[in-house]
Image (cartoon, rainbow, N blue to C red; front, side, top):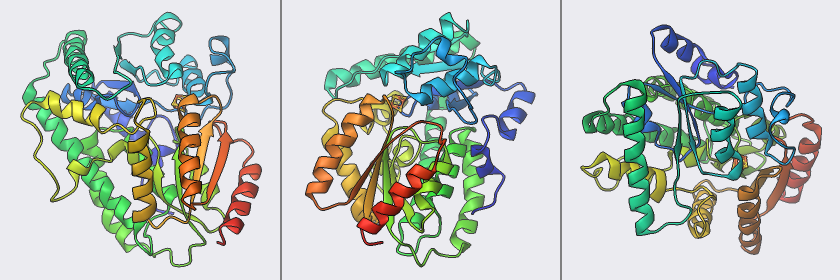
Length: 379
Ligand code: SF4
């Protein structure tokens, strides 16, 4: 396992970088979820913090508000917030991603009297009108954020933030390449630890840390005897222990289609030597990042793109089998997984479908199913 303080940030909700940032008077703004324009928060000189449920033990507080039919990730994060564990936040951004998350905007306001909150409504289909709509929403968000905190967010600051995020995507792609190679240099567990830490700090800090980490990853002993190369796709995973369960029997997770994993930085435009320069208007670049490249199943009619992404990963990472996981009551990934499973199995790709809770609980059942899957695919 890779050793570095930065990647240990995945273990706890709070981390020393957030604490130091707050101690200097810096603001931290939480956000749900991948396709939100966190670059605007960065450009405002604040720390965008991806909402998580790390360390939650039960749903005692959140179940007074939510029902048992809400996904356990949302119930976990709310439980932490109600217990004061998100006291370090100075604001919250919520998008209309899934119904469970969308409701967090109201709950944080009505039940926790949490302010300031910002809501961004993005369309659920890809259209030209949708593009204009997203641009309007982001522009409105820039104004609201500026007004709420009395800060100026200039086009120059947005361009600088976009450059930092582009660099971040480029660095994460380098790590991804190291886990895709024939003899990977990094496990899927460590990859997710890095991705989670990356979502909990300022990206300029993350870039520094990842630049330092890269030589250590390259120098790691390669994984030579891998029982099977797996890809994992589906609902929100921010707990590296879940990936570790998949890897416990000698398999290696070499690719993913997870919102905090590869989908968070996947951007062909950020690859070195690749593609066109960013558009002059930073809002157009944000529309591209937050909408046009979205792989979130909230987008109706986006299945072909999501399938293509999974097929590309299977080919590029030479995947032997795909684990499609779903947090119970996650309709978006439930539907998406089912559609992916039909096509992948028709193409002869072995698929393991897992329903789970956000918190890991009893891992024995998963280990048995993973073991059986590895035997089935001949690993
Ligand atoms: S796991 Fe599914 S239901 Fe839960 S927040 Fe994510 S998309 Fe929504």
